[in-house]
Length: 440
Ligand SMILES: [Zn+2]
Picture 1 (tube, rainbow, N blue to C red):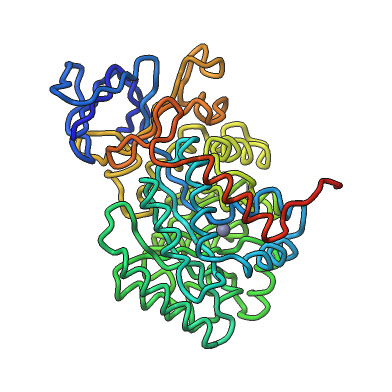
Picture 2 (picture 1 turned 60 degrees about the horizontal axis):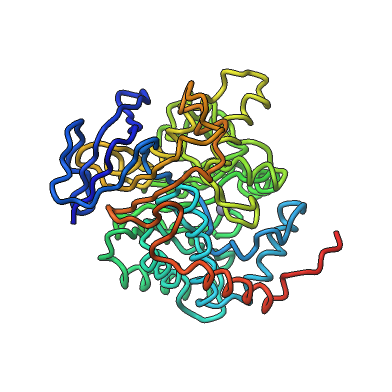
């Protein structure tokens, strides 16, 4: 199956610099086989990209897709009150609920240009097995790409935490040959996992040659608690347990100290910053400017809908580009080009797919999006890169391809029945008594 994206303005990243050029892109199977000015349609299905920007699909490096059920539910609460409220709902969720709420997340992500996401799915689900399979099922049925982990917590050496670990490993085995799915481990956080549980998961990563993702230094309460109990910061504590011996995506790192930054740089940890979630939960801002200065691979995530309350990476890019300027009172701090790199090139590096994803070039995998430039927010086209970060809202995403397959064309999804998903998710929220009559 061949597809040609004809006559688009293609966003390229070479030698640390963004630029764009008019090119025709020929896709053969799931990869870009040629990029040229010549007309090479050669029997391929043609997508006319005139007036559109062709850019790499966006990579959301930290989310909890099933948490779409929490959208607009537990708002304006301090961190641990918020966590308590969302976890109570999760105790009532089934494996099927995880499928539909993940599918809802995928709809929102595709419509706003995300083609790959790093997911930490539900810790607890009503049935004894299945959340990884449910999330993976939604990924498979929709055609999107994902790196999935099951959020695992174990504050005691309980049968439950051991059982969930065993289930996660068995579920990974079920899907290991799927090309668009990668699995990693997802220890939830240093305050919700005991030390030998963190070591056990790290050992399992080593055995499977996979990485892991973990929330680190997200709140001041976590920072103070771990320092009091362990005599070191959360980042130093997990490093002392060997957690960074395998590839790690550390989410948040809001309270990272200079010493923490040095450790993460030396241990090649990727950091997924989540500026909107951190602001909404009153946690502050991760020092992304210092991470970049240290040479850490900084990527970008939305976090879950419980704390954002959406999965729109254009909003997240905008927040990331603004928050450091405001908090440092420095207009040159964390520029649009840096943020665009976090959402594409750096996200690909974080999941071990550097050069294959997050970039458009011959030989790369054909995950790409077409942006309609004939919109007021892109006119005049003084800088399209600034436009993507400072004036876009995600609604300009017109067409989406993942693995060479068209998943959205002219804003119509090709693989998902949107109304069915919306209906199922409304029913789940009602069953869990989440929908309230408004009286705030
Ligand atoms: Zn999270």
